[in-house]
Length: 103
Image (cartoon, rainbow, N blue to C red):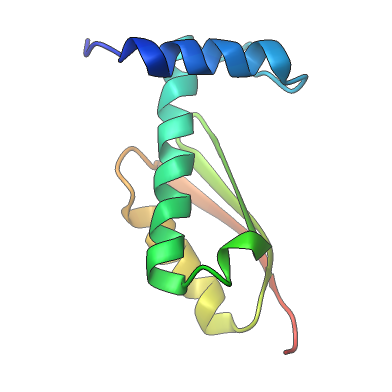
């Protein structure tokens, strides 16, 4: 089993203490993995889709399942966001709830 950096573990525990939606069905290690996955997906979306698109996309990860939600400007952007999320390490599957809105 790999060691978890102490600061990430403390961040996960601290976040759960402050957030009412803490997932108690996940171990702290899984919660840290999900935090890493979410951060990686958001970072890749920003670099590949552009900073103006990212605020419109919410990313959530639970047990390696990434859920994308929000609004995008085209079907191509919707598809690209899903493929970007699938490329992130530790992602098991992607639920794409992004909706295409007219510009």
